[in-house]
Every structure is written in structure tokens, then in C-alpha cells.
Image: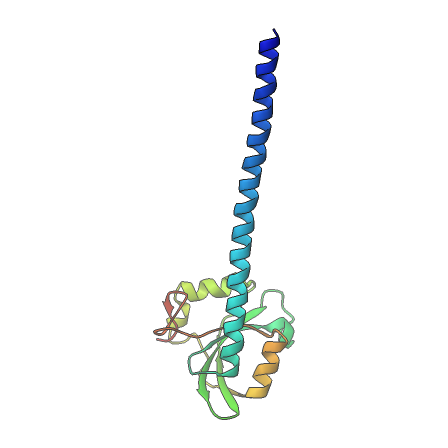
Length: 160
């Protein structure tokens, strides 16, 4: 009887330590992916800050209309803008004709190729001083900037 009790006691000790090991491994995996996501976010924001300082034609600006005060509607929170011209002190932007309720919807619209449609952006540009563009980035009105690589962002073309 004593041997049976000893065996059960050892098994329970082993199972407790295995449970703790599994929990530790799960925690480490979650911590790794959390850290990886955070570093990717910080890198993306650092790139955006550099792109704002040195804008180029075809840069894509992700706009938060709530910060700009341009919207009172619940579903018109986000919009895209594209740089079409850069001078010494002005940036010419054309705005997307579509509005989005969530930030991931903006990214999905690019992934699904909506930007390659001829009529996605308005035709008449708005000229904004470079200083104001920088202020918009600092105020998070421009919350992200992407620069196309080989005319692609998120795996899809950004201009027709």
C-alpha cells in the first residue's frame, strides 16, 4: 500500500511540474510574438517618420479623419491619400474616394488591389505645406506612411 501511495505522490509531482512547464512555454511563446509585433510596429512608425521628412511621389498616407475633424459620421474614420507631386515646401495629395471604419479595412483595401483602380483617387490634388504634413504626423492625423517598393505596397500595385 505504501508503494502505491508513493507512486501516486510522485506522479502528481511530475504532472504538476509538467503543467508548469507547459504554462511557461505558452507564456514564452506569447511573449515572443507580442515582442515581435511590438518591434514591427515601432519599425513601421520609424519608417513613417522618415518618409514624412522626405516625401516622394506615390507615397501612401493613411489618414485618421477623426483627428483632422473632417468627419462626424461613425463609419468614415479613415482614408488614404497619395503623394502626386513634391516641391521644396509643398506636397500635392490626392485623396481616396472611399472611407473606412477600421484601420485593418484600409490595409485590406490595398491588399485586395483597390488602389490599382483608375478612379480610386480624386483627380484634383490638394497642395499642403510640408510643415503642415509634419504636424499632421505628429498629431497622428497621418498615422502611417508607406512607400511603394517596385510600385507595390502590401503585395499589390498602388497605381494603375
